[in-house]
Amino acid sequence: MSQAVYLDYAATTPVDPAVVDVMVRHLGPEGTFANPASRSHLYGWLAEEAVETARRQVADVLNADPREIVWTSGATEANNLAIKGVIEARGGGHVITSATEHKAVLDACKWLEQQGHAVSYVMPGDDGRIAPEAVAAALRDDTVLVSIMHANNETGVINDIQTIGALCRERGVLFHTDAAQTVGKLPLDVQVMPVDLVSVCAHKVYGPKGVGALYVRRAPEVKVSAQIHGGGHERGMRSGTLPTHQIVGMGEAFMLAVDQCEEEGGRIAGLRDRLWQGIRALDDVAINGGDSPRLPGHLNVAFAGVDGEMLITAMNQVAVSSGSACTSASLEPSYVLKAMGVSDDLAHGSIRFSVGRFTSEADIDRAIENVLDAVRRLRGAA
Image 1 (cartoon, helix red, strand yellow):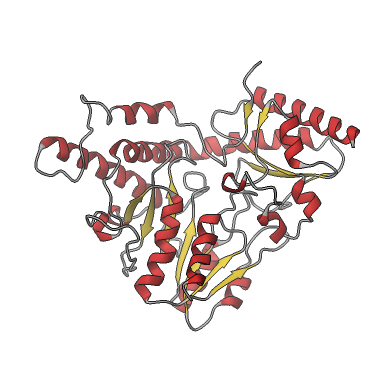
Image 2 (cartoon, helix red, strand yellow):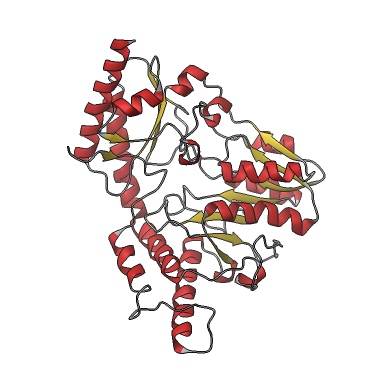
């Protein structure tokens, strides 16, 4: 049997071969394998140089100062460091986030609530977007942090973080955005965008899993208390031996993404639209989020009268998901879609397709055929 078409790029991406080549050179005994914190010999100096080169590469993508980049194990840790770290450094305060954030943000906020801190959850519109007016209405005198994602991981819908950030800046409130899905796909210039903290990771942009970063603005300085202790690495914000091979992989992946962004984004959007044109031949299908601006690779489709998990099983030639990867084991309908006002039945019948760098037209045509066949069989058996 031929391998299934992979259309779950929003969950993770394969590592680009060029990134693999760079990483391998920092693993074996003939490579730059040493601990970057070992400053007493050449091996350590070379590893440190490689890490700092990658730090510059990541900073360049955000138009940031390299000193504003703090390495983490991924966007989940970066989100936790941003949210918990700011509240601890400020000695408490009110936090605003949205009901459609990634679980890494929502669970960090729930933890804060358990510690006695106040958190407000802004609801999205039917289009899945977080309205700046809703954020403004939730602001209080004691609000210290707002955390709204750049684009949603399930629907791909893009939020107006420029306006939201400007509201926060006017009120002297720190603004954090989870940009795991958008970095390398949408422009995010921290010199132009009014953001104070930005979470990014490598594995959504053809880099390795297990590495990410938090942008922490220096001018004026944003204080973030460390959440992992033991050695005072990363200017005291995140301790732990740095994984040189993963970090250089992240730097290379970010540079490749920026170099290919415009051309690749257009090609991927074309493939996504081709997929939708094929799927819409079915009756009673709709895009969750409607006509909202969305990432080029995302397509979240509601199939009326079909159970999503059964559809995934029936589509044995297409690898997709019914929501974000972190909740894929849950039998509950997507909390993101429910917050948007999608009914339980339609939320249960929704599938996230996500197209990426290695998707071809032949893959899309094969996926369309498989989807149409699976939906018709399931509806015919109902």
